[in-house]
Image (cartoon, rainbow over all chains, first blue to last red; front, side, top):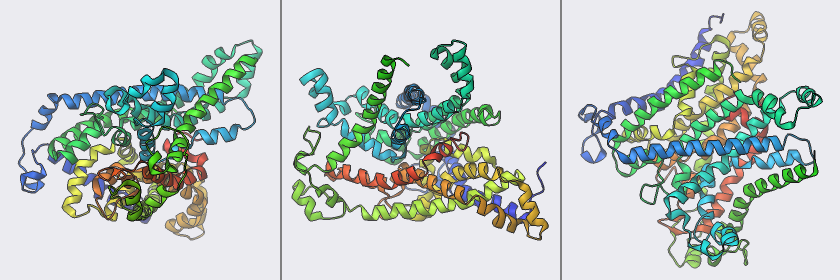
Length: 297
Length: 284
């Protein structure tokens, strides 16, 4: 049983956090809920608190909004593809580096550096790499498919542009998967593996029957956290394609940004934000329930 | 292990290392290319120059010479200072508040009215969902383009990390040590400050550096909420290509310089990166 908290400690433990959260998160949350039932935008000429309620118009509008559907679908595809590739690459890499060999520490230190770079810098690097004058077209692809490579314009093509955004994410976050899975794999007791080897198990059997089951809870946490993080993707889109050409590489975060900052459609942007928050709160609640509270790690 | 599988192993590792290293190497190479080579296809600069780095630290004259007078970029020193102020202060606030909250959560199970779940939630939802209301709210109270506005926002967005990281450390300290101090006549508050705080000193530093790393990268809110005075480094980085022209070399140079502080901090807390990124759920 928890002891009764001392008054001053109780104050310190709750008051500063609540003041901070109220000041910059709860008040905006209230504004978000309010705005999503109005049709306010800054061009209306009156302040937002004077806006009239318009019922659920904004929410109805969402169902007819093809651009919203496209952005949402694209974001979900993005999450599935990048998280799957990052997981497989990270797992493979962790498995490769499980054996001891000279220089291993150095290699691991080198592998994780993309994690530390500012996201905008990674976006910039890939933006520059895939320019028409960049090395990908002019050096690497040219070496493989010849002169035809120079006719490829990565950032002017919706599919290729979106692929570049995915590559940037994979480049930066595979090390995250690697680090978690490596920590898990190295914690598998050596004697379990040795015992299986004595019994004649192949390394494939050992991986699928011993190592993988043991790191499964860890892998679930890694995949869940990375998926939530990948769903936020904004910086890379902004840097690499700017959502274009047209709106063909837009993600949901980028669409909300465009609505609020470029089109001043605050009410509709709030409504979309609210729906997204509610949907994700449910997903996150489930995640917390099945991993943290069950002690899955 | 057979010879073939060994060679495959080395080859796979080599390809992966190349994939990790080539993009950055090329960016560094671009940052040393003179204006005429920015759009040239060769990998290494033929005529290496420091001009791109000079552009970053002012010199409107220099830019005129190199690009024919199209560029209107600003020096990167003010954004760098803004970043250090905003990120530094918000990190200190997040760590201090995080310590008190984590202590309460660990010792008295008092996560506050919202619960620890709410703090996790604030960190896991896309920040873009808060862009609209925060923009409206900050405009109303005059916080647009102010350091204070960004500081409060960053502190609130990262306090989750310090709560969860520090709670893990405080949980490991036997409660009896504080109780002994209380029996010796210290108030519970002083027992916390005198007994617990010194024991988690290094954890405070680790969580602080980690939060610094997270806030340093923040882009979306800085982009939306700053215009002139409080522009941070990530936002400044976007100004080299666009309205100002296409200063690719200078942009690459700015990206390289902007990456140095987080790389240093990242390697200092290398062993704790995973603990931080998973809110203490996974410990390496």
